[in-house]
Image (cartoon, rainbow, N blue to C red; front, side):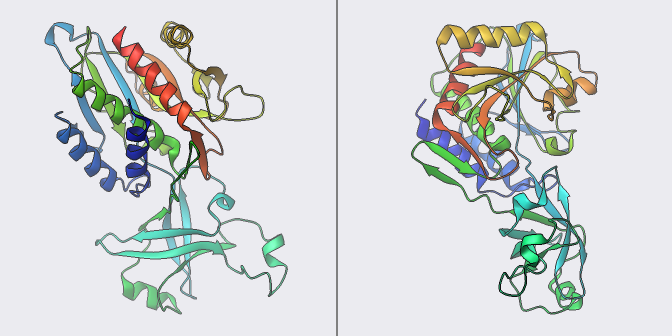
Length: 343
């Protein structure tokens, strides 16, 4: 697979806003792209995009499900302040300082869009030392709209109301082999799965088991893969992000195979299969434990799906902030998944 194909898919996904609960732009893109590739994708009631990659009725009880998520972190209008600023609530878990001075886009429920910036209430260093000492919390920060507003009534007249979604600018960049962007968790893996599906179709690859892909829309709040799976699945591999941290072995150039996260250990045999394949094909990888993490496979286990489950992903540094990974990690992840499904 040409790495540029993977990078292009990731860019297309990252530049389409999709905060948890408002993922229609990415859903539409995936549905159209998979149809263009010759697949027959469909959606369940909660919006997850499910793609039968290869289905043979003779293998109906030995299916493999590869999952990634397209929902991202974001904000929502909590209330409108008297001065016309917007007080927010978060979608997903991240410290507010990670979003400070980010450009945002507000999506109203009647289809209007507005731009703005998320910043401290008093952001000027020439006014006081407030920017140095202020806590980055909901009381001290606000979204300032790029409109001529001076009061809460001015904002309401625009059609902005509590419950409207706010997306953070992804700031996608591809520089010297590194992909830098918000929301590489998990649009990097989603792009890798798209590229894998493209190569499968172009090479007319056949399998000895049924293969499905699923792109979930509520993973960041914990219930992305909790329902609506295709039937006949035996194994589920969540393809998400690998954690880069001081005492872990993963970095943003490796594939990470997770042995355990906050939901507990992953299936011993399925995880071993992935480790052995990574060794056999000679890719750069690490085995790690993620202490503050849960995946779509975790959600499926909590919903009593009777699967073997595993978790892999390319290493992503600065998770839930302005994230980064290297093209080598993306290609290694692609090779690991392709080799596994061909075995």
